[in-house]
Image (tube, rainbow, N blue to C red; front, side, top):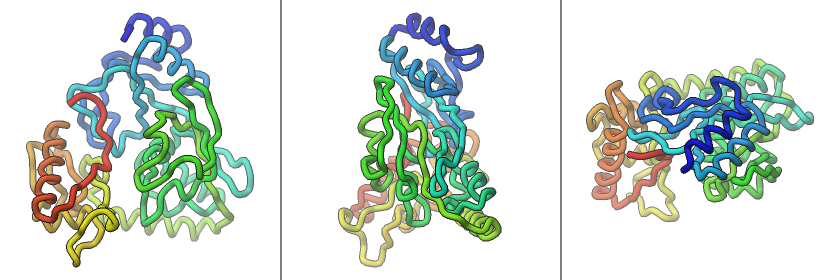
Length: 313
């Protein structure tokens, strides 16, 4: 990793304040833990994104993309290389049946945009943390649907900085999965399928979603959302009376409220691990391993992480 070469390169095209060295990452995540990045870079255009990727490749600097900071756990020793935050935040309507949202647009912001224009299709996703780019990368799910079910095409940037437009059918969408995790492409924008809707009815659906989340999720304490993927009944041998729910497995293992250091399992939703304010990434990871071991010992089910581990632990 040639630090001097990389810094010289990005200084030639980024404005003051867009890049910072040894930047703390914990405040940028919903877990509020983790060490610093070697560099934190905000990119505000497609050209800047390509230039950063090219400079990183030429300097052997690893690139990590960070969206809204939800669904990630950053190690206490931080992230080596450059952490790039796409600050691309445009929303447009290229056709009556499509809304295009840049990767840096928050899902909540997109929901508000569509509702305000009487466009249906995304209203039930009100309250979803994170950004469009992160949701596409991990094929975010809510209420039995995946975000990939709602999109028609996506612009992606390859590791060499070249862009292409990919149909949803070519994205390899599956539960918590997209092809981006394999190809290391970066989502630039996504087009969502919409239809006309009455704004007041759309707002009612959004309010119901928010109320359900408030009732069933511990929203007042730092977390990363659900920690584990739900088991697959076709792959995992579940007890006869057990729903295909990671939270149910953790709950029935008697782990609600269990703690490691400043991390504990929520008493509201057993698939949420919380940072009580003094927690570290090591505490959270230790609790994850304890839950995995106990659930496997009790039920023979191997829980798989939904949260993405970044950096050095």
